[in-house]
Image (cartoon, rainbow, N blue to C red; front, side):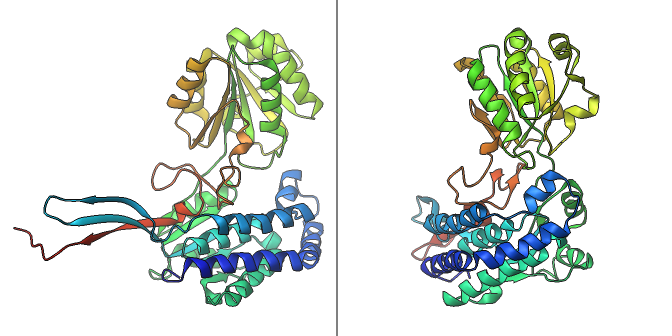
Length: 397
């Protein structure tokens, strides 16, 4: 796969997009059966599990978008020449074999396969038991597309067994065969991978995302951004879980924002100062500030300006995604510079924490660590680099 041409890898992605479109009804039928079997699951879980015609279209579009991105393999990151005439080039190269372990999002099958293959890697996928049949069908269609492009179908492999021991086998590294593990799922899955893996892990835990309303926030923007950040899709990791409001703007901003959230069916929990302005808001507990609800629930705290927001986020956040709403340029730049999260926004919804919205075509997840990759994990994030040195007979004195 490292030596396969970029054209061949792109052909595979386009072929996969065509196959998914052709087999859309079969995919939806299998998925409907698995959703029905999920029974009385939470709305957030069912949302992650469910495919729709629009989401099928989105998968096909993502494949084409990823194919349209520049080929990262062999791309020159930096180049320089030393006084002794040695020429150095730092170039991108695939990581190798990547194991991706995920839970209830069958569309991750396609995103993960496409991004890994585009970057010249081989991939081993282990999907969740609740959507195993949907994921397996999608994986087989992708394998067929690899064959149509003249690439080995085994560049993508899918673990069909539901035995939990299979995860342990992947985490062992298979005697050095696996170079990287990426978990995408709930806290317990990610924690297990981080604890037990004997190979490198690229992951994040919770998405404790914040919206901060500065005293100089425009009220209309504050309403729209807060409601979208929380309620567009409550079950995604980029959904806001806490709202921070500058004490100096609390009386002006809280009432309209709270009313808009209630209208959308969001439960609100606030600190004492917040409840002094709106007594209908339930009291927040200490654990609310560090809870990823993945549900229509939002904690609200009053803070001392932008610096108070920065301190709160540093204490309770998960270094995922945080946004400031303000018309004050100095406050915006202070927030952007000081909040140490993978994604920091100004006057925009936290739900833009998505590889497609970044122009990556798709993503495997949002990395919140500080090494190798941060933010959406797209094609370039699944490469490493090597240094090529070209000489003309030089020897070191």
